[in-house]
Length: 210
Length: 105
Image 1 (spheres, rainbow over the protein chains, first blue to last red):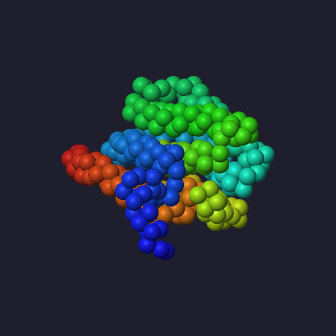
Image 2 (spheres, chains in turn yellow, blue; image 1 turned 30 degrees about the vertical axis):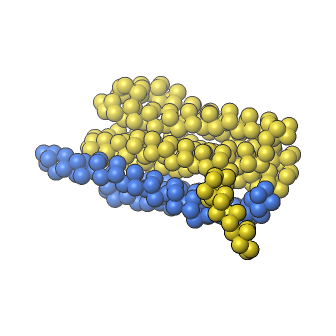
Image 3 (spheres, rainbow over the protein chains, first blue to last red; image 1 turned 45 degrees about the vertical axis):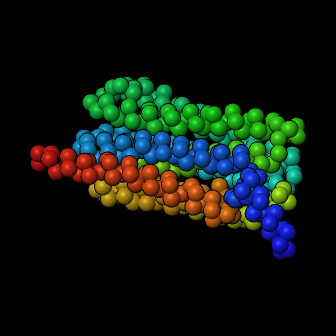
Protein backbone atom coordinates (compact mmCIF):
# COMPACT_ATOMS: atom_id res chain seq x y z
CA UNK A 1 0.00 0.00 0.00
CA UNK A 2 1.44 3.36 -0.96
CA UNK A 3 1.56 6.17 1.52
CA UNK A 4 -0.99 8.19 -0.43
CA UNK A 5 -3.48 5.31 -0.27
CA UNK A 6 -2.90 4.91 3.43
CA UNK A 7 -3.49 8.63 3.93
CA UNK A 8 -6.72 8.26 2.00
CA UNK A 9 -8.03 5.53 4.31
CA UNK A 10 -7.15 7.41 7.46
CA UNK A 11 -8.80 10.49 5.99
CA UNK A 12 -12.01 8.68 5.15
CA UNK A 13 -12.17 7.00 8.53
CA UNK A 14 -12.16 10.34 10.27
CA UNK A 15 -14.46 12.12 7.89
CA UNK A 16 -17.05 9.34 7.76
CA UNK A 17 -17.76 7.22 4.75
CA UNK A 18 -15.60 4.34 5.98
CA UNK A 19 -17.32 1.09 6.76
CA UNK A 20 -15.81 -0.49 9.88
CA UNK A 21 -18.06 -3.57 9.78
CA UNK A 22 -18.08 -3.85 5.98
CA UNK A 23 -21.87 -4.02 5.93
CA UNK A 24 -24.46 -1.58 4.65
CA UNK A 25 -26.45 0.66 6.97
CA UNK A 26 -29.70 -1.26 6.48
CA UNK A 27 -28.09 -4.42 7.77
CA UNK A 28 -26.53 -2.70 10.77
CA UNK A 29 -29.90 -1.10 11.55
CA UNK A 30 -31.64 -4.47 11.41
CA UNK A 31 -29.00 -6.02 13.66
CA UNK A 32 -29.45 -3.26 16.23
CA UNK A 33 -33.22 -3.74 16.08
CA UNK A 34 -32.76 -7.48 16.57
CA UNK A 35 -30.59 -6.93 19.65
CA UNK A 36 -33.20 -4.65 21.22
CA UNK A 37 -36.08 -6.93 20.28
CA UNK A 38 -34.24 -9.94 21.70
CA UNK A 39 -34.10 -8.08 25.02
CA UNK A 40 -37.87 -7.59 24.91
CA UNK A 41 -38.36 -11.30 24.44
CA UNK A 42 -35.73 -12.15 27.05
CA UNK A 43 -37.54 -10.01 29.62
CA UNK A 44 -40.81 -11.77 28.85
CA UNK A 45 -39.25 -15.23 28.87
CA UNK A 46 -37.32 -14.63 32.08
CA UNK A 47 -40.39 -13.29 33.88
CA UNK A 48 -42.33 -16.29 32.56
CA UNK A 49 -39.64 -18.66 33.86
CA UNK A 50 -39.87 -16.89 37.21
CA UNK A 51 -43.60 -17.46 37.66
CA UNK A 52 -43.34 -20.92 36.12
CA UNK A 53 -40.77 -22.07 38.68
CA UNK A 54 -42.50 -20.24 41.52
CA UNK A 55 -45.90 -21.85 41.04
CA UNK A 56 -45.97 -25.46 42.29
CA UNK A 57 -49.40 -26.22 40.79
CA UNK A 58 -48.64 -24.77 37.38
CA UNK A 59 -51.09 -26.37 34.91
CA UNK A 60 -49.72 -28.94 32.48
CA UNK A 61 -52.43 -29.03 29.84
CA UNK A 62 -50.44 -30.00 26.73
CA UNK A 63 -51.12 -33.57 25.60
CA UNK A 64 -48.94 -35.34 23.03
CA UNK A 65 -51.88 -35.10 20.70
CA UNK A 66 -52.76 -32.52 19.55
CA UNK A 67 -50.79 -29.76 21.35
CA UNK A 68 -47.23 -31.15 21.40
CA UNK A 69 -47.52 -32.77 17.96
CA UNK A 70 -48.88 -29.53 16.57
CA UNK A 71 -46.27 -27.29 18.15
CA UNK A 72 -43.46 -29.65 17.12
CA UNK A 73 -44.77 -29.51 13.58
CA UNK A 74 -44.90 -25.71 13.82
CA UNK A 75 -41.25 -25.74 14.90
CA UNK A 76 -40.43 -27.88 11.86
CA UNK A 77 -42.33 -25.49 9.58
CA UNK A 78 -40.53 -22.44 10.98
CA UNK A 79 -37.09 -24.09 10.77
CA UNK A 80 -37.78 -25.11 7.17
CA UNK A 81 -38.88 -21.58 6.35
CA UNK A 82 -35.51 -20.37 7.66
CA UNK A 83 -33.79 -22.82 5.32
CA UNK A 84 -35.76 -21.60 2.27
CA UNK A 85 -35.07 -18.01 3.37
CA UNK A 86 -31.31 -18.53 3.54
CA UNK A 87 -31.36 -20.27 0.15
CA UNK A 88 -33.40 -17.34 -1.16
CA UNK A 89 -30.74 -14.90 0.07
CA UNK A 90 -28.05 -16.98 -1.66
CA UNK A 91 -30.05 -17.00 -4.89
CA UNK A 92 -30.51 -13.22 -4.61
CA UNK A 93 -26.75 -12.68 -4.36
CA UNK A 94 -26.22 -14.93 -7.38
CA UNK A 95 -28.64 -12.64 -9.23
CA UNK A 96 -31.23 -15.36 -9.85
CA UNK A 97 -34.42 -13.31 -9.47
CA UNK A 98 -36.90 -16.01 -10.37
CA UNK A 99 -35.49 -18.52 -7.91
CA UNK A 100 -35.24 -15.91 -5.16
CA UNK A 101 -38.91 -15.02 -5.50
CA UNK A 102 -39.82 -18.71 -5.46
CA UNK A 103 -37.85 -19.30 -2.25
CA UNK A 104 -39.38 -16.19 -0.70
CA UNK A 105 -42.87 -17.40 -1.57
CA UNK A 106 -42.08 -20.78 0.02
CA UNK A 107 -40.94 -18.92 3.15
CA UNK A 108 -44.12 -16.83 3.18
CA UNK A 109 -46.30 -19.95 2.82
CA UNK A 110 -44.51 -21.57 5.76
CA UNK A 111 -45.09 -18.40 7.79
CA UNK A 112 -48.79 -18.40 6.92
CA UNK A 113 -49.05 -22.11 7.79
CA UNK A 114 -47.40 -21.40 11.15
CA UNK A 115 -49.86 -18.61 11.98
CA UNK A 116 -52.88 -20.68 10.90
CA UNK A 117 -51.89 -23.77 12.93
CA UNK A 118 -51.17 -21.54 15.90
CA UNK A 119 -54.56 -19.87 15.51
CA UNK A 120 -56.39 -23.23 15.56
CA UNK A 121 -54.56 -24.01 18.78
CA UNK A 122 -55.60 -20.73 20.35
CA UNK A 123 -59.21 -21.37 19.34
CA UNK A 124 -59.16 -24.84 20.92
CA UNK A 125 -57.70 -23.36 24.13
CA UNK A 126 -60.44 -20.73 24.14
CA UNK A 127 -62.88 -23.63 23.77
CA UNK A 128 -61.45 -25.18 26.95
CA UNK A 129 -62.08 -21.92 28.77
CA UNK A 130 -58.45 -20.75 28.76
CA UNK A 131 -58.27 -17.00 28.23
CA UNK A 132 -55.53 -14.45 29.01
CA UNK A 133 -57.33 -13.69 32.27
CA UNK A 134 -58.68 -16.96 33.60
CA UNK A 135 -58.61 -20.72 33.14
CA UNK A 136 -60.21 -23.80 34.64
CA UNK A 137 -57.03 -24.67 36.60
CA UNK A 138 -57.11 -21.55 38.75
CA UNK A 139 -53.71 -20.20 37.68
CA UNK A 140 -54.55 -17.02 35.73
CA UNK A 141 -50.85 -16.33 35.11
CA UNK A 142 -50.78 -19.36 32.82
CA UNK A 143 -53.05 -17.64 30.30
CA UNK A 144 -51.35 -14.29 30.75
CA UNK A 145 -47.86 -15.58 30.04
CA UNK A 146 -48.93 -18.10 27.37
CA UNK A 147 -50.95 -15.66 25.29
CA UNK A 148 -48.54 -12.81 25.96
CA UNK A 149 -45.49 -14.73 24.73
CA UNK A 150 -47.07 -16.60 21.83
CA UNK A 151 -49.14 -13.57 20.87
CA UNK A 152 -46.15 -11.27 20.61
CA UNK A 153 -44.32 -13.93 18.63
CA UNK A 154 -47.30 -14.44 16.33
CA UNK A 155 -47.42 -10.68 15.75
CA UNK A 156 -43.75 -10.85 14.70
CA UNK A 157 -44.48 -13.72 12.30
CA UNK A 158 -47.44 -11.86 10.79
CA UNK A 159 -45.38 -8.70 10.30
CA UNK A 160 -42.58 -10.87 8.86
CA UNK A 161 -44.96 -12.41 6.32
CA UNK A 162 -46.09 -8.95 5.19
CA UNK A 163 -42.48 -7.72 5.08
CA UNK A 164 -41.31 -10.69 3.01
CA UNK A 165 -44.27 -10.31 0.65
CA UNK A 166 -43.30 -6.68 -0.02
CA UNK A 167 -39.64 -7.66 -0.53
CA UNK A 168 -40.55 -10.57 -2.83
CA UNK A 169 -42.80 -8.32 -4.93
CA UNK A 170 -40.21 -5.53 -5.11
CA UNK A 171 -37.30 -7.87 -5.81
CA UNK A 172 -39.23 -9.63 -8.55
CA UNK A 173 -39.86 -6.27 -10.19
CA UNK A 174 -36.20 -5.28 -9.86
CA UNK A 175 -36.98 -2.50 -7.40
CA UNK A 176 -34.99 -3.96 -4.53
CA UNK A 177 -31.46 -5.31 -4.36
CA UNK A 178 -30.09 -8.51 -2.84
CA UNK A 179 -29.19 -6.51 0.28
CA UNK A 180 -32.89 -5.87 0.91
CA UNK A 181 -33.56 -9.60 0.72
CA UNK A 182 -30.72 -10.31 3.10
CA UNK A 183 -31.94 -7.78 5.67
CA UNK A 184 -35.48 -9.19 5.56
CA UNK A 185 -33.88 -12.61 6.01
CA UNK A 186 -32.17 -11.44 9.20
CA UNK A 187 -35.55 -10.46 10.61
CA UNK A 188 -37.10 -13.77 9.60
CA UNK A 189 -34.31 -15.83 11.18
CA UNK A 190 -34.69 -13.83 14.36
CA UNK A 191 -38.40 -14.71 14.53
CA UNK A 192 -37.37 -18.35 14.09
CA UNK A 193 -34.73 -18.00 16.81
CA UNK A 194 -37.25 -16.63 19.31
CA UNK A 195 -39.54 -19.60 18.70
CA UNK A 196 -36.60 -21.88 19.57
CA UNK A 197 -36.94 -20.50 23.11
CA UNK A 198 -40.72 -20.19 23.33
CA UNK A 199 -41.41 -23.74 22.14
CA UNK A 200 -39.43 -25.59 24.85
CA UNK A 201 -40.14 -23.16 27.65
CA UNK A 202 -43.86 -22.71 27.12
CA UNK A 203 -44.89 -26.06 25.64
CA UNK A 204 -42.37 -28.65 26.75
CA UNK A 205 -42.35 -27.46 30.36
CA UNK A 206 -46.12 -27.89 30.53
CA UNK A 207 -46.44 -31.33 28.97
CA UNK A 208 -49.15 -33.44 30.53
CA UNK A 209 -47.13 -36.13 32.37
CA UNK A 210 -49.67 -38.90 31.74
CA UNK B 1 -18.26 -3.43 -2.54
CA UNK B 2 -21.03 -5.41 -4.18
CA UNK B 3 -18.62 -7.91 -5.67
CA UNK B 4 -16.97 -8.33 -2.31
CA UNK B 5 -20.32 -9.02 -0.64
CA UNK B 6 -21.25 -11.57 -3.28
CA UNK B 7 -18.00 -13.35 -2.66
CA UNK B 8 -18.60 -13.45 1.09
CA UNK B 9 -22.08 -14.86 0.64
CA UNK B 10 -20.98 -17.71 -1.54
CA UNK B 11 -19.22 -19.03 1.60
CA UNK B 12 -22.44 -20.68 2.71
CA UNK B 13 -23.44 -23.50 0.40
CA UNK B 14 -26.80 -25.24 0.19
CA UNK B 15 -25.21 -28.30 1.72
CA UNK B 16 -23.93 -26.34 4.72
CA UNK B 17 -27.33 -24.77 5.37
CA UNK B 18 -29.11 -28.09 4.99
CA UNK B 19 -26.70 -29.61 7.54
CA UNK B 20 -27.42 -26.80 10.00
CA UNK B 21 -31.15 -27.34 9.42
CA UNK B 22 -30.82 -31.05 10.18
CA UNK B 23 -28.89 -30.30 13.37
CA UNK B 24 -31.58 -27.85 14.49
CA UNK B 25 -34.26 -30.50 13.89
CA UNK B 26 -32.27 -33.10 15.82
CA UNK B 27 -31.83 -30.77 18.81
CA UNK B 28 -35.58 -30.06 18.72
CA UNK B 29 -36.27 -33.80 18.71
CA UNK B 30 -34.04 -34.23 21.76
CA UNK B 31 -35.98 -31.48 23.53
CA UNK B 32 -39.34 -33.09 22.75
CA UNK B 33 -38.00 -36.45 23.94
CA UNK B 34 -36.76 -34.91 27.20
CA UNK B 35 -40.20 -33.41 27.85
CA UNK B 36 -41.43 -36.95 28.51
CA UNK B 37 -38.62 -37.88 30.87
CA UNK B 38 -39.98 -36.92 34.26
CA UNK B 39 -37.15 -34.66 35.27
CA UNK B 40 -37.33 -32.15 38.05
CA UNK B 41 -38.48 -28.80 36.65
CA UNK B 42 -35.31 -26.82 37.50
CA UNK B 43 -33.07 -29.39 35.85
CA UNK B 44 -35.46 -29.56 32.92
CA UNK B 45 -35.51 -25.80 32.30
CA UNK B 46 -31.70 -25.70 32.52
CA UNK B 47 -31.30 -28.43 29.91
CA UNK B 48 -33.95 -26.93 27.63
CA UNK B 49 -32.49 -23.42 27.77
CA UNK B 50 -29.00 -24.85 27.22
CA UNK B 51 -30.11 -26.71 24.10
CA UNK B 52 -32.00 -23.64 22.90
CA UNK B 53 -28.89 -21.52 23.31
CA UNK B 54 -27.00 -23.96 21.07
CA UNK B 55 -29.79 -23.68 18.51
CA UNK B 56 -29.76 -19.89 18.74
CA UNK B 57 -25.99 -19.88 18.21
CA UNK B 58 -26.37 -22.10 15.13
CA UNK B 59 -29.07 -19.86 13.67
CA UNK B 60 -27.11 -16.69 14.35
CA UNK B 61 -23.78 -17.92 13.05
CA UNK B 62 -24.99 -19.69 9.90
CA UNK B 63 -28.48 -18.54 8.90
CA UNK B 64 -27.87 -14.97 10.02
CA UNK B 65 -24.34 -15.08 8.55
CA UNK B 66 -22.68 -13.76 11.69
CA UNK B 67 -19.86 -16.25 11.20
CA UNK B 68 -19.05 -14.78 7.81
CA UNK B 69 -19.07 -11.16 9.00
CA UNK B 70 -16.19 -9.26 10.50
CA UNK B 71 -15.36 -10.03 14.10
CA UNK B 72 -16.08 -6.38 14.91
CA UNK B 73 -19.79 -6.81 14.21
CA UNK B 74 -19.97 -9.83 16.52
CA UNK B 75 -18.14 -7.88 19.23
CA UNK B 76 -20.52 -4.96 18.77
CA UNK B 77 -23.69 -7.01 19.08
CA UNK B 78 -23.34 -10.18 21.10
CA UNK B 79 -21.44 -9.20 24.30
CA UNK B 80 -23.81 -6.26 24.92
CA UNK B 81 -26.84 -8.50 24.42
CA UNK B 82 -25.47 -11.23 26.68
CA UNK B 83 -24.57 -8.67 29.33
CA UNK B 84 -28.09 -7.20 29.35
CA UNK B 85 -29.68 -10.65 29.57
CA UNK B 86 -27.36 -11.58 32.46
CA UNK B 87 -28.41 -8.40 34.25
CA UNK B 88 -32.05 -9.47 33.93
CA UNK B 89 -31.19 -12.90 35.33
CA UNK B 90 -29.45 -11.32 38.30
CA UNK B 91 -32.64 -9.41 39.03
CA UNK B 92 -34.94 -12.40 38.78
CA UNK B 93 -33.46 -15.62 40.04
CA UNK B 94 -31.99 -14.92 43.48
CA UNK B 95 -35.40 -13.61 44.50
CA UNK B 96 -37.06 -16.63 42.95
CA UNK B 97 -34.85 -19.01 44.97
CA UNK B 98 -35.42 -16.99 48.14
CA UNK B 99 -39.19 -17.25 47.71
CA UNK B 100 -38.89 -20.98 47.11
CA UNK B 101 -37.12 -21.43 50.43
CA UNK B 102 -39.74 -19.33 52.23
CA UNK B 103 -42.53 -21.59 51.01
CA UNK B 104 -43.93 -23.82 53.77
CA UNK B 105 -43.08 -27.45 53.12
